[in-house]
Length: 276
Image 1 (cartoon, helix red, strand yellow):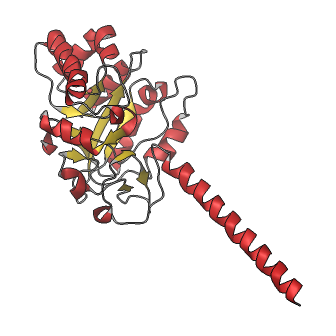
Image 2 (cartoon, helix red, strand yellow):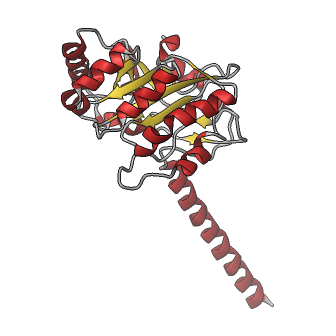
């Protein structure tokens, strides 16, 4: 009898240990995701981690997702991931790492719908596509700072190095357009530290994360139009800051229809200038 009890306790221990390890692996997999982190806390309860990759947890369709930090916590750093959740307004943002022929179609669709976008550019985009940057500016879009070299900014601890990444981008933009860059900033890959957010604020920037995105950045593995709609339509929500990539062929092809569908759902398009 004692032997059976000991054996039973051993089996139970191994089972619990295995479940714990499995759970730890599951948490690690999800927490490393740049787009979707399953969390249950309300946005106001989540505190900002010292260093983190931006991630989201989604609930019911049409509701505001939770982020790594709540909107109120982020505001201490002039940082944002969602707008007014009582208004059906969408903020369209595009990360621009390089130009591959798809930005023009995106701009055409925005113009057709009288929608302003914010294009977060890096140095390479400014160097190789100055005419498109001029068009963005002339058509009333915001061009924001995505840093010059697209590094992991969470690893930059010196203000001087952080400032150079930002200033080199802003200075080249001014050379191209003759205008000052609006001080809106998006950390490359959503990687940040609280020190970085403080540095950005000290330099006069507002930092923008996002509340909706999908995997659209693999140039050689683009989602179908239906796959894009399946992600972007059910998860849209009031005050959404949407992250898309200008390199996406799918985005160029569906942008007109996507904006139409969102308008049919009762949404309109706002400007990140509202946050400033």
